[in-house]
Amino acid sequence: MTLAQFWNIVETVHRDSRGDMDKKCELLEVELRRLTLDELRSFRRHFDECEDRAYTWELWAAAYIIGGGCSDDAFSDFRATLISMGRQTFERTLTDPQALADIDYDAETAHYEGYQYVPTTVEEELGDGETSPRYAPAPAEPSGQSWEEDKVAELYPKLSEKYDYNG
Image 1 (cartoon, rainbow, N blue to C red):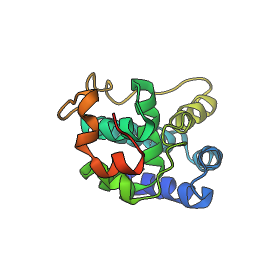
Image 2: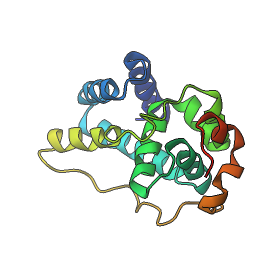
Image 3: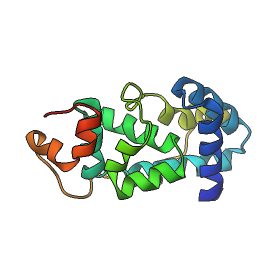
Image 4: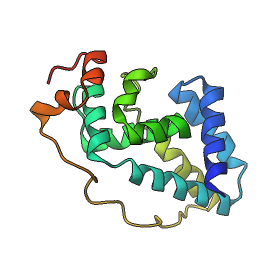
């Protein structure tokens, strides 16, 4: 599976779900069940690579502002939700996390837990309980410049204003 095919599936699911995260999970499962096991494993690899690319301090700051705080687990959920919104939103946000202030990004579902588990769940079922190993170990630390909690609002003033975050 190519990266373009991966994003095509993600964007089709996003469009058809109208942004509803529960519906996205259901539709993603349907789409993934249409794939061969090798294609599914390739999808999972692309997903993991995207999650790793999004593991940055800059994006974590945006997630922190939107959620009024953000644990490591919640940041994983945030990155999966961001991926679920499609390539354009994902790439734009990686380049400029404050761009989240310009899109309809629901703080209630910004840290949705579940979307990232769908590929592995389907692979376990199709692979008779087996899953392929991760393509590489997950990064131990986010990339980029770390920040202090009491100063995070200064990093993205438009986001802080939109989500009423004062630190």
